[in-house]
Length: 348
Image 1 (cartoon, rainbow, N blue to C red):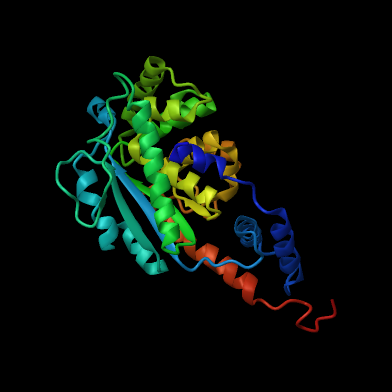
Image 2 (cartoon, one colour):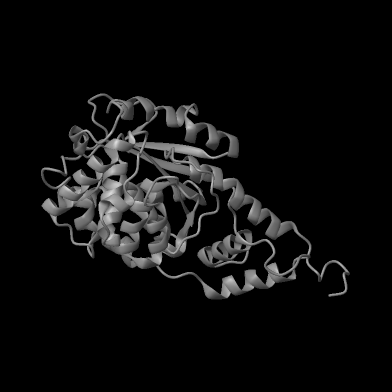
């Protein structure tokens, strides 16, 4: 049995007994029932994930994958492609968005080259390069089925290595110039909607070029005909290596009963792929924030997820996931440390 198959087969639903035990404690805290809103939802979800009404969220990491895309040659992004290999090392140096926010919240960052278009080693970046970027999906499949599976299994491996090192709260992130293009393609296929409905400006594309970007996505879907019910087929035909890596982390976390914090738009595409592979993965996802990128709400509606934050962010990298770590930890701290009516004489 392959790594992917065994991982997918090991994903179980959340433990209902632990969820009920957590709810009982939350309802006895000295506050009106349900008054902490999403904080209470997070605690019940974490209890169900860990199969215990007590859980630890103190050791945090963002696993971020970098890769390039052949569709870049179509002119769907305003920035030079070499920004991918220039920026990815900054993730672990703590000087870019995800690096700075992670440093502030006490989280680590692991950067992985899964398909960056360069020949040299990137400082501080793990080298799991499949090849130097995907093929141009506007001219044929972005990758082979074997490469798609490989990207998923690299993500699973990264998740499991992190879990072995004691990380108990894992976020996902990415770096890849023009990767909103394959992400919009994935969401368009799964939602069965026109690409224009889920295509935005990405990292700063001029509005008059957004229609061209959507037309390029539409052309790619019509050419490659991805099967909307087959996540691996979608990934191979219109996806990206870093998107596959993030989907793999979601699968790996779910199989090992560890919560996985989604970032923004690119991570929603990865989450949809994981969800298509095994719908139970959704139970392990925490949506960090509502990305400002077009198509966000359609993806979140399919996943039935409500983000913790709405900050108007569209940076990516894992920045939103890192920012949400503090909310998740605050939820757990409040759950553990607020007094209950049984402990304080308040007449209830």
